[in-house]
Image (spheres, one colour):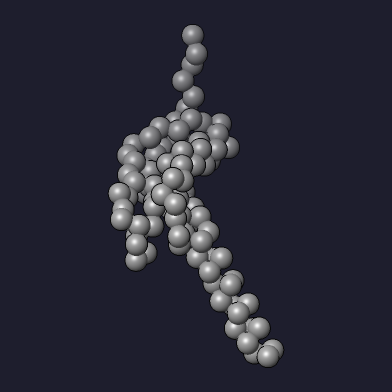
Length: 102
């Protein structure tokens, strides 16, 4: 009985980890250029605001350097969301000096 409970526990943990949303980056892609992505895990609903979330995280990364984000490129996969092709948003950005407000 103890082995059966252990197997169920491990299976539950694997399922929960597979459902997690993960962020990768920022990864340096050249001088002051970074790539960051956010991906939904297993059983996605398809309604997650992944692009907004990854843009906010990149903005925070630049803000920590007292800079602003400059978006260079963005991409989202279009589905279908099966066989590991989960919803994903990827951006390429740089951190620039804040623009002066006049």
